[in-house]
Image (tube, rainbow, N blue to C red; front, side, top):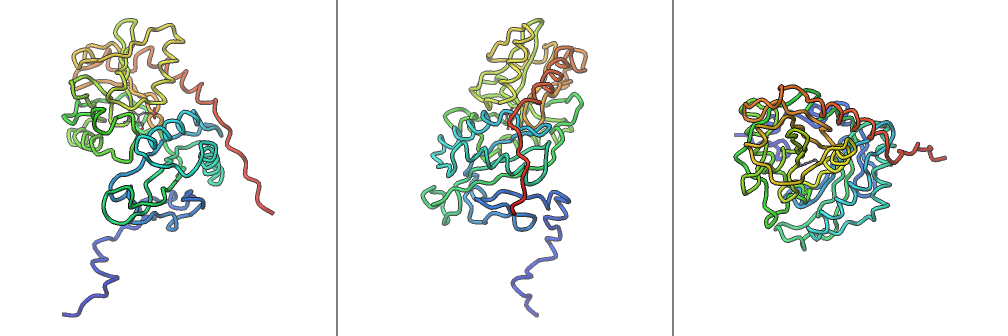
Length: 317
Ligand SMILES: Cc1ncc(COP(=O)(O)O)c(C=O)c1O
């Protein structure tokens, strides 16, 4: 039997290249450790500990109309997540802001989403972080429609619980989302739009990548951050509801209470404000976006006009 060239081993089993999957996104510039790389050049090492062990942190950030919304809040959370993982971020907050703004600018994106990652970096095998000597910073900006579309969603309660704070605290936005991915798989398999995750005491925690709010008569509630991300959008929305004169209770919410809410919506940078139509087949309110939810969506859109302006890049002479 004639042996194949090692470089061609089973090549035909991997027919799909990055360009096929990414389409035009493939040509965007990505910031990788001090350089802007394009297309096939924008890759990280297979020895990167975030790839090998999920050892890193990230943020999802949005730009609207030439401005980055809540940039400082996202960078603050990134630095806090990194601190918990004892991950030394090689750039200051000001420098990270410059990376975010410039990455949108070089791609001429006025609107879009960014994934900003700080990872443990390249290291020899073994999970000890000491094996990695230089953390890495990657910023990817791209056009991105609201994650869940613009319709009210149907949620399924997952059997996969959100992490306890004595595990990886849910407030750490780490590069390891396996619980949330397992929950998402459950909702996919059962043809729901997203999964609802509970905490270890059985209270509502959050959706797979969104926080959650519920209204009972005049009172809005949202879970404490014991088992969910301290969402930037969550904080903005608490402010919006309070500006409407509504009380917002940050408390434990049971499934029974959620099923019997008058309105429920989810929040997130990627998804924005998402009305919830039903939870585990129980209709919420009239199974259509509630009146206050509509008002929150409108106000949120207005607020997203505020932010840090993306600079215009002047070509170097
Ligand atoms: C698990 C989880 N919860 C909540 C959110 C919403 O957070 P934010 O509003 O800061 O985007 C996200 C965002 O990605 C998330 O991943």
